[in-house]
Amino acid sequence: MPDLSVTIGGMTMANPVMLASGIIGYGLDYPDQGVLSRMGAVVLKSTTLQPRVGNEPGARVVETPAGMLNSIGLENPGVQELISKKLPEARRLGTNLVASLAGESEEEFEALVKILEPEPGIAAIELNISCPNVKAGGMAFGLDPQVAGGLVRRVRQHTRRTLIPKLTPNAADLPAVARACEEAGADAIALINTFSGMAIDVRSRRPKLGANFGGLSGPAIKPAALLRVYQVAQAVQVPVVGMGGIWDAEDALEFIIAGASAVEVGTAVFVDPRRPLDIVHGISAFLADEKIASVRELVGTVRLNEAGEKCFP
Image 1 (spheres, rainbow, N blue to C red):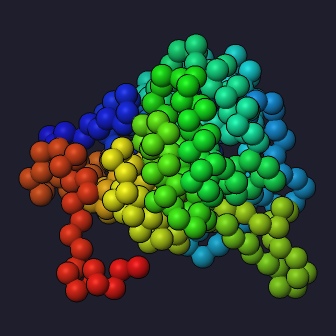
Image 2: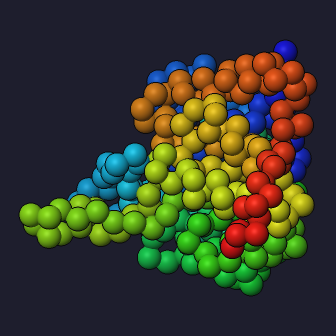
């Protein structure tokens, strides 16, 4: 059988497929726990210092052609409940757990990392500096290289765990943001979070989301996500974790060939909770068919068309 194992920073995974944050909460109510135990890692729902009720009132999720808009607003019970109630149960999933952290200031991120550092069972920390659905913090940290790098540098001082900032596609120069994070001490770069978007009810002439705007995910964004993963993989030396519209094994393989060492699956889970496991099996079958011994041999092997290189932006 092909070797599917990959290493991201100090986190070794049995395969390169991770479940993205915000999709399954803390994994405790997932309809098939056996799927979670066979993932390379599970990224938990983003946690803040204090509990958040999220965006209200009105719709938080709207289906769109080949995707969905969401504006949850980082609803979560806060870090203390994560430690006391969520983590003890999540550790039973039998796979790597990645804590996703969100804050409105650098001080909040620092406080979160300090609180979680002594807690066992966390393989890595994903810094959510890319959420478009909050009024403060979130995506604001990931738009500017200097700001993003400064945050990573401050957090890096307080943790030995694998540190993975998750970047927004809405940044003007995404490779520059990624390089700043790498230089500040990030062990890997995750991208992309959702694109900013909206949907309007033509009869009421009001946005369909209660918060007016939200984040677009799903297959509709895959080509744009794939390009950004390729661009960032060319710009940094640390591993890249790619995501954005991954629906099947072929999508995941595209991201790996573009330069991602691992991938995260999100929106597809709403359609089929077993889809992530199907992706793992599909990657394995592809490697066997192509007589490739390890998935690591496939990372970044894309060959650009020679004529096309002259037109590349």
